[in-house]
Length: 253
Length: 168
Image (cartoon, rainbow over all chains, first blue to last red; front, side):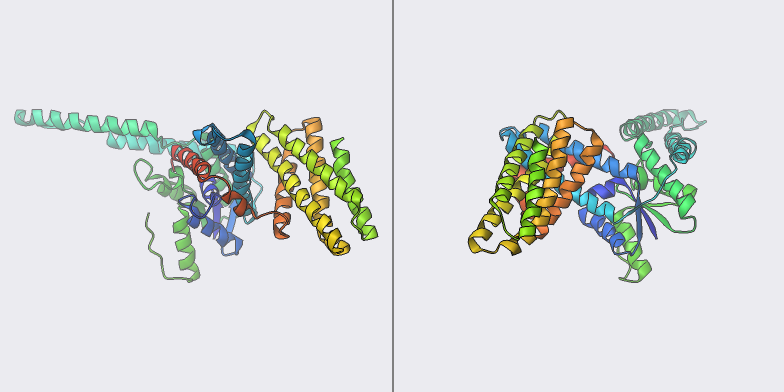
């Protein structure tokens, strides 16, 4: 079983600031990283993912500096405190990455896959979402029902506008970095793991969304690219079932 | 100048190991190393990029904490007359600390780019883990406990918000 670790899972597995302060998905993410460490799965990632994870940690720390929490503390103490947090999470991140393979990825191929396959897939999903929800005037020949039909049309138009607003806010189409991450996974699957079951471990709705407007994404990725996008807890349950370690776990999503 | 101070620690370490005696010169070299590490800590705080500044600060602080503990251990070993044993245990970590000090000094002298920074960072982590293993410095979890809970929470909150915006 091949598991491609995406940024969100690597980060969740690194945010363990103390026993009481940890990322809410820390235990399942770390659990999956440990499966790779123990050789139960082959965990892989890419250099771009590693860099992006580091960048996000550093940005969160920059924002912490701007927060009021450190305003009354002298500069040297702030540096002592924040450098300790930075060291902790980066050492955790390094530890997670050390148990994963980073394979060579053809960046030219990744660009082509991004432009010709990944972006069009998301764009198509976005268009399909809009088309499916677009209201049409209900057909009626009876004068008696024209008023009702107008009301129904009006209501569905309002609902449609709501959906458009939601889609605008949380666009189905991810940013360029996520598009490339999926393209990297596709490239690895095609070149190195043609016959293997290939997972992307992610917490990001753009890969394994469960609710509106993302719910069609994982199914489409699986259908088009034979890649299963799953939450770490779902992959853990699959590993346990496959290896017969435990009875099939109930997965609450 | 700073590089010479750290190179002196390596030189004195080798000389003491050969003679199997903790010399005054070695203790003095470590004390000078502590002063230089503190200077680098202070200098790093003025660095324009805050993340780079924190990374440099961490490197300087790691050197300082290790050398402080080494000086205490070396002085105590002289009192207890246990020179060779203590020296053998500490020589490796003092050598690694001095190497990081040299890299750090040359970084400040030349203001080198991100490549040198990556090397400083990995050396810092290597040194921290090594020092934690032989109990020269506290484990990182213990040091993290000293960071006020409000600051730790603030980091977690900022991180969670960022991921939320990224559609997690």
